[in-house]
Every structure is written in structure tokens, then in C-alpha cells.
Length: 253
Ligand SMILES: NC(=O)c1ccc[n+]([C@@H]2O[C@H](COP(=O)([O-])OP(=O)(O)OC[C@H]3O[C@@H](n4cnc5c(N)ncnc54)[C@H](OP(=O)(O)O)[C@@H]3O)[C@@H](O)[C@H]2O)c1
Image (cartoon, rainbow, N blue to C red; front, side, top):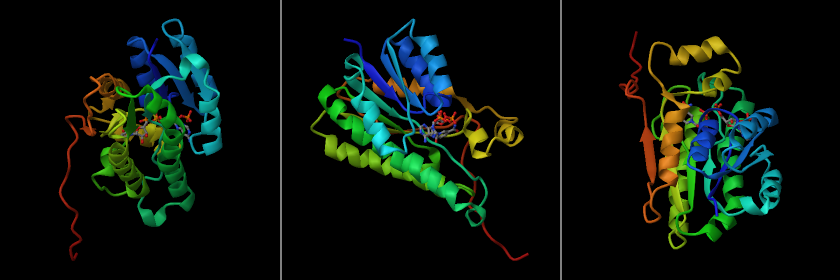
């Protein structure tokens, strides 16, 4: 039987590249996201290679998540790997000038959405048993603070700790859990963060070498395809041209 991977946020960036990488390795794909047209395009591209099931899904809606999982066709029910990738950052400005809605959207998507999908898929992953995996997409922002990181970074810190705590509960089941924490990667991430301002998004990647969606997809596939007795707890990846900087100090003028 083919191995099945369930990917959230498959319409763009890491999720779309991950769908292509798993298709290359022969996995059956369950592809989800809110933009149906993009899911259909990806299905048209990949279904000549592997079985593909698409479902339009907003991960913030717990009932919708459960309905998508309940309605999985029989061939797509033995889910062996869940890629919890759907997520976003909003509001790069300081906390004191952020709209509360933006904070709520990040919490609802990056935390509540990830929890919704994990809860709905756990029974299938447990059935798959040893070798099954949950790959959560965190961020370097979950570990390292920076100005304008506020709720985004905090939501990714949740992803890290939830991943670790899940491991504790799943120890006897053979289901692996990994927090992949990427640094700067060029996707639609900055376009979303800057609310469609392409110039502001381009500025983020200008004059440097960011990671690509394919770089991260390669790591996601690597983690999911490891031998069943291995668990990578956290994988933090940056482009060589990104590193930390010194502490900020407020000095008298
Ligand atoms: N790019 C980076 O530098 C970077 C670094 C660290 C971590 N990350 C994380 O990596 C993940 C993927 O981001 P990306 O860089 O690939 O950005 P992206 O190109 O903007 O892709 C984000 C994906 O998330 C989906 N999504 C957003 N809200 C959703 C919702 N409510 N329900 C379902 N799907 C939703 C989007 O699909 P729809 O809009 O079609 O729903 C899209 O497919 C995110 O969790 C992000 O926080 C990114």
C-alpha cells in the first residue's frame, strides 16, 4: 500500500514544495488549504504521478477539519505523516501599534489550527503506528526574539513545546514528532505579513540569499522518511547569510 501524507497549507511555499517532494518519493497526497483553485492546479500537476486527494480547508475551523478527516476516501485514510505547515505572520510593526485582530489571526491559525488538525488526525496516525510522524513547522522566531516578532514568535514557541509534550505522550505508540524551525525562506510569507505589499516583501529578501521552499521541503521529507526508530526533536535551519545579532540597549541620548 502507498504511504499517505496529509499536508496543510499546500497551496503555497513550503507546503506546495513538500507536496512535490513527497510525490517524487511516491507518497499518496492529501493536500489542503483555503485556495481551491491552487489545490486543483497542484492536483492536475501531481496526479499523473501519485494518487492525490484535495480538500479546501481553513484549519481554524475545528468542525471543518474533523469533517475533512472523516470524509477521507478509504485509500487516503492510512495517513502515515502529518505536515502541520499552514501558518502565517502578520504585522511586522511593534506590539504597541498592532491591530488586535492580527494577533488573534496568528493565534487562531498557528496554534488553534495546528491543534485542530493534530487532534483530528491522531487516531489515524496511531493506527499507522511505528514510522508514523507529525512534522510541525515552527520557526526560529519560536526560540529567538526580535522586534516585531510578538505573537508570531510566541505562537511558534507554542509549536515547539507542544511538539515536545506530544512526544512524551506518544512514546509507546511509535509516532514521531518533530518541530522544524526554519529561518528566512523566500515564499509568500512576507507578502502575507505585509498584507500584499510586494515592495515591502521583496525588501526582506533583497541582496541576500534566503532559503527556498524546496530547501525546507527536502528537510521535511528527510524527517518523515527516517527509519522508524529515529526521532528528530527539533531541526533549526537558517541560510548561511542569516545569524543572530547583539542585544538592543536603550542609552541616554
Ligand atoms: N518563509 C519563512 O521565512 C518561514 C520561516 C519560518 C517558518 N515559516 C512557517 O512556515 C509555514 C509555511 O509558510 P510559507 O513560508 O510557506 O508561507 P506561504 O507561502 O504564505 O504559505 C502559507 C500556507 O499556509 C496556508 N494557510 C494560511 N492560513 C491558513 C488557514 N487559516 N487555513 C489553512 N491554510 C492556511 C496558506 O494557504 P491558503 O492561503 O490557501 O489557505 C499557504 O498555503 C508557516 O507556518 C510559517 O509560519 C515560514
